[in-house]
Amino acid sequence: MAYDDGLAARISDVLAGEPGLIEKKMFGGLAFIIDGNLCCGVVGITLMVRIDRDSYEEALTEPHTRPMDFTGRPMRGLIYVDPEGVAEDPELRAWVERGVRYARSLPAK
Image (cartoon, rainbow, N blue to C red):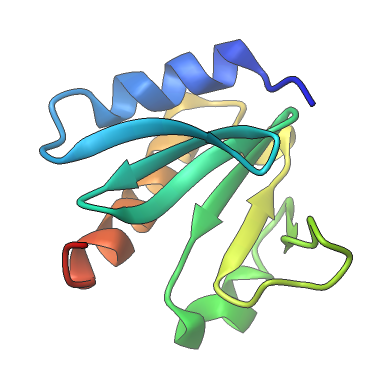
């Protein structure tokens, strides 16, 4: 599956200079990993964000979000944000930074 290069570039811009960052092809898209922990990615045209499991249900009440169900089963702690939810740079930055905060809260791998 191809992924949206434009969205990937916008995420890269937000993450520029982030220590411990690598990009890796995963889930048929591109994942952004900090110190060995997934923080966000692009699957098709959709932003994927890793969030605290305790915030999962709350995050799904926000506009343009839905469970990540890549395997047909929702993966708690991972959500999709549809393109409408990241159309503007401040929206994208907020979601990406949320993923970064969570990744940074975990022990490095």
